[in-house]
Length: 132
Image 1 (cartoon, rainbow, N blue to C red):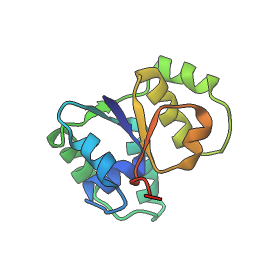
Image 2 (cartoon, rainbow, N blue to C red):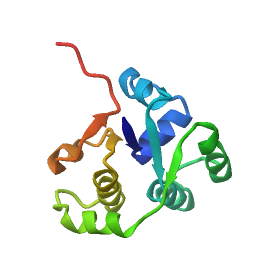
Image 3 (cartoon, rainbow, N blue to C red):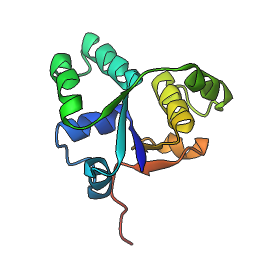
């Protein structure tokens, strides 16, 4: 399976945060899966660092991605074309471009954002399903 991590999914993975459930954790950690980290997420992390909404070491994050087996994904023309075709169900530009990349790359978007379901983008939720 091909996965594109939302920014919070990436941070939760790197910090071994319990918010990332066992199902998503298993997929991300499966060596058979291709895990993509977008330049969009790295841009979002940088913005949040600059405005004081995140405490992290950008150099450390950049250095650890290859060791985690994650592939970097730059923004391409195909991503922009997919972005232009997405509806506007909410106003987060980072999410919009990440979802467009997932569509263009044939990847499942790993996210906790419930807005993703409105877009018809294949996705994996970060949290484990709640048993009824």
